[in-house]
Length: 132
Length: 132
Image (cartoon, chains in turn blue, orange):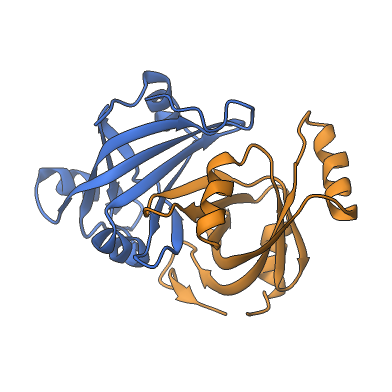
């Protein structure tokens, strides 16, 4: 387990930053989704709300390896993670659904991940550099 | 093999559209990159310039399955494809490098992909529906 660097968390929290979850089926077919509910409640943890996440949820049940792509302009980072838990009740889910309700959306659960590695993915020769 | 609808090709072609390409390593770790150097050759063929694509290239050597996610606002399409070749010379690569030169970038090669299926990944009830 590693901690996400502060500048990556800062980019994640910036308005306009694009955040994607990428998973893989057990047969090795990748699948990416864009989600506004992606966040890091602690430097070693990532979460996402399960909103319209049919294929991703199926993949995560088959293969616990996942990655988050965080990008804004020429800056991009990839956070490799492993599934820790799927919470289908509790205060974390209730809090997320209060926010989602204002957008007429609903999360069936929250997926919680432990952070395994962080990479620079910027459009530069630094692409692929392991940061944590 | 399927043929992309004009609406999907248009989404891939438009420069302002966000595009991400995902691959999977031999041990099941998914990986995504922002995909700026993408060209639609025809309704069933996509090529991508090899620019700072270290992990992606390594993944493609052992697993030819990829997914392109293209989105603009609430509309999004997931295009599943298969790598069918890597070319290191030719007019398409030269043309791409003329364009990339303005951004001080160079593509070492072009990866060619054949489209296998297309999914609606937009925000809405149709999300996850196979359309081709």
